[in-house]
Image 1: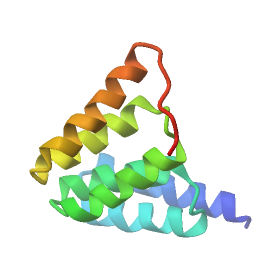
Image 2 (image 1 turned 45 degrees about the vertical axis):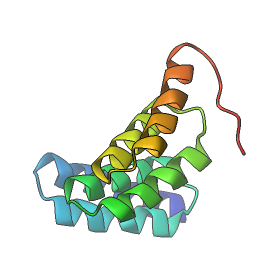
Image 3 (image 1 turned 180 degrees about the vertical axis):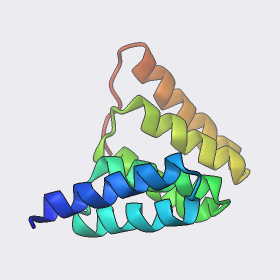
Length: 113
């Protein structure tokens, strides 16, 4: 089995577990997907949002940052990161992420640092 097919299988397991409300199992499967492929944007995004639901906010922020670094022009990645920062009380960072999401929603681009 190739790493991509193993990655995709793990990701799909995560999606199934998430749909069933089994957040811990979803977290584990999403972690597995990014272990197979550290540059797997969808895995990082899903892991971050799942961690946020599990109240593992600091770790969720790390995943959210990774997702925005991998896909700096993804609107949902910036929106999710903003939500994570809000939950952690980091309002300035949340406003910055929200601003990037707003730029993207109007058809702009976010410059990679």
